[in-house]
Length: 239
Image 1 (tube, rainbow, N blue to C red):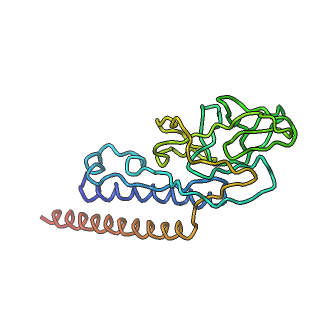
Image 2: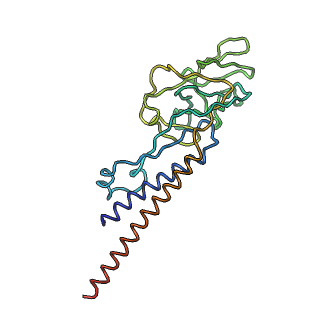
Image 3: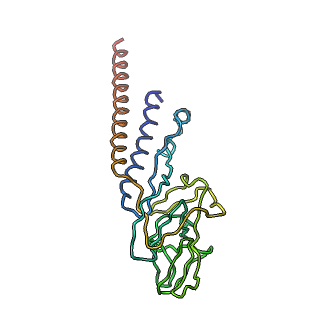
């Protein structure tokens, strides 16, 4: 592969990855508990060395999670929960345990505490089944009935490097090989609150304009290179 085309190709792959991530951020500006994703381009030397093997944008760029907290917004529902700190709620899905900051929970027909997708929220290592009556949840995640009798304890997970959690969509993360730390130290549960997305639309729009300009610049390099090669071929054909 022509070296100019190779360099331009990996640059355009990285631009496509940035475009995808920033578009996803903008689409989730109103999603409860959403954490902005940040596109991180792999080292240029590494990309150039593997240019023959690059088949998709994932090898040109990866994404990390911006774990900055979103604004907490008050609601009137005791099962709306937010986390003040860097912990995550644990939910059981068909693909295994996943982690989320999205706390718009409710009770299903059997009394299980579930998320908006119907996945059970975990407490004490298992599902939480609550009575269909007023409950209170304290700052440590302990759940009590109206008589202040304990009903369960929310499982709150913390990670040593939360920015490396892999975003799956719908507010859920995969641990990406990390194990939760053994002790939750600084995270507090806020009942009657939801955490807003930490996406700043203006910032993402500026990023989209920047990547668009970068893409056009790379495209102009390819066009110039193509015209140069075409001119060289036509010149050689005259001899």
